Length: 313
Image (cartoon, rainbow, N blue to C red; front, side, top):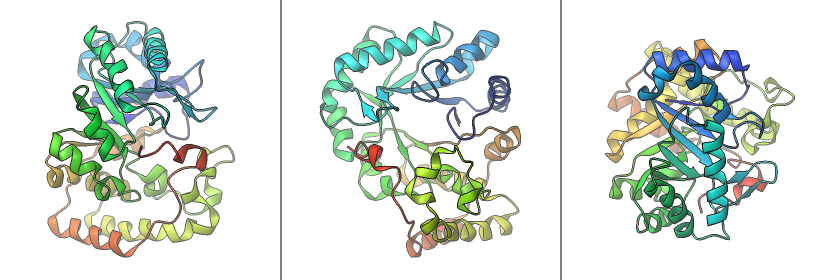
């Protein structure tokens, strides 16, 4: 499992090498987005380039694509016209080099009922142009409304030791009830749980996380305390903090009785190998982590205000 949009961005050549290594190592879920990158070159262009070079790998992967969102304007376009434009653009960029197994509108649109969005995506499924309909960053009510329109193949939400809202706000329960897999993005807390960021200044001058509330200098050290607690467990298990973080996300599958698929991103081969090295947490270790989460509060919102209004709709 891997995402194609995480800072910092590698060169195309390096990205293709990392993607090849991921697939060769058994990663079979690729998470891409129309808005991951620029209009001239985003993650879909990368997929086109990769499968042009390695067409033999198409059958090895499941490709999930998000769209219907203008990052520069921080605005969704989830009505029928917006869905059609987004999917058609994604198909144009991919140019038949690979298949879209799953498509989701990236964020909710307060001006458009989810029923309209799902129905518009479903028409592409019914015409055989894409594989399935998903949801992204939604509420439990939205999940229940959406399944009345069309089968929902997966729900993509942020889930990590830094963000457990999906487990407490009913979304995970709805997915369990309806047997819908959960795709967990940012399982490493947008990089906090890599244990490589020790102060705000470790973020590059052009790193977009500098505007995220949880990375601000006034809360950075407080949030770092959670990382340090997880690091104690990692040292005892002779593994790394990212491996513990990913193992915790994966362990939610047993609790929920539905697949929970972490999609960590990386720009380095060494990190790729680290992320793919499976670690299993014992019942006692999972309880220890739950105890840590109960007593330690993560400070700051998940994203800047311009985007937060489209979350959990």
